[in-house]
Image 1: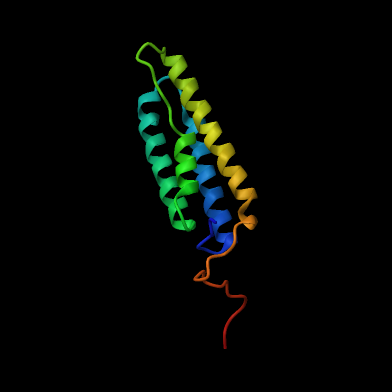
Image 2: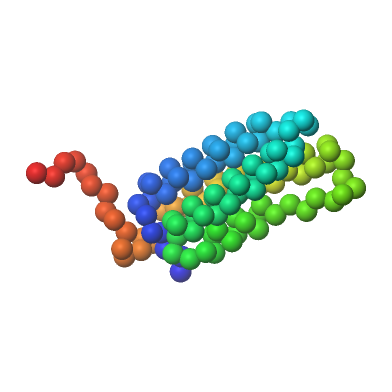
Length: 122
């Protein structure tokens, strides 16, 4: 069973932050910067995989996200086809992350998860 290793509200914020980064990446994608954004997509995807690995007790979710992000480019693809394939992949990754954010409460807390402090201690 996959357990969450950090406070659930913090996990939700981190996932939503990664979603925002992915959304910004997709918004910047143009015909002229495709090569640059392919590299940025790889970096973003790796950062998300790393973050998921740190939030959960095993690598299952990180591996699932990584699988969603796999893109096979064909050397015969047009620039337009490559751009659309990258954009579709980012959209699928964002959809996957949104689904995960909605399901955070379903994951049990790991026993060593820090407790959120409410208020100041005296």
